Image (cartoon, rainbow, N blue to C red; front, side, top):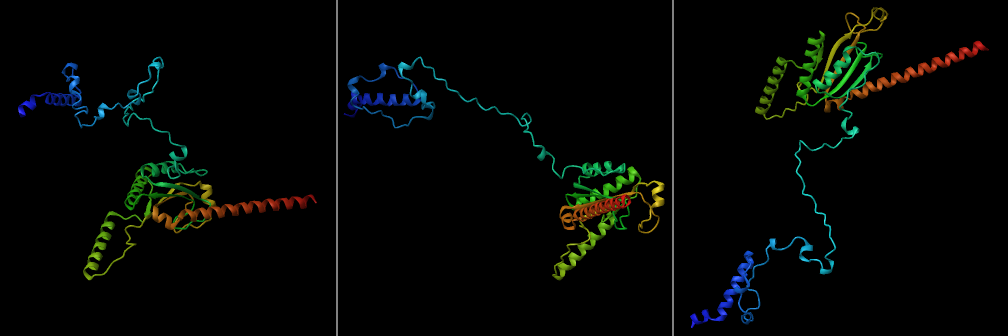
Length: 314
């Protein structure tokens, strides 16, 4: 009986439905003559397939799923398809122009030269900026001010910032070597530790730390004499003064022979130490006071000259 049912028209219709659903799933077109006759279609009017539509079977373009009406055959629909993005490697990409205000900041430029500068000054500024790598350079012309005797008279001061304590010591050492080898000067770097001195101080610091750890005490050495953060390189006299100026020089300059030549001093700081000492504000204030005093003297001289002229006319 089961074999009779399997051979019957109902089983054949089920087999045709299975084949049709499998062929629609695989995308194979079935011929018309392989489908069952119309008298068997009433057995299973619903498609024997619970498989959902594949994503590839769904048209991504809404115009394809809804074709235009037959009356609109002559109407051409222009659809602008976006061009696929082309990958451009980084070495072929065009750089965006940088504004002039952003390209050069206040930290990345050389200061202006004063009037009648010595010949070594522009070369020294360029070497300090490019080769030594000091930032935020500032130049103060102190040739007409009273400076400390340790610096000498007629001083031009350069102030720069190093990136770290190690950079500070390396830059000061290289500057002294460059001045000795290139210009035969005798610079003196106050605050720069020699190699043997640095080894001795490091050995003493390690011994103090070892003794403190054994006794259970805490050693707080903020100023250990190694990480000073400030080195003053005095290049000495870089330009001799004329003989007439040396004879007229009446100032006091430390001890020893008097030399009225121009001196250059390079002050090197770390960023924290420079903000703490504020040497820029100190010398800028002195220059501003000297400028105001000179202006008052000129105004007083002009006023006295006008009074003398008025009295002579009367």
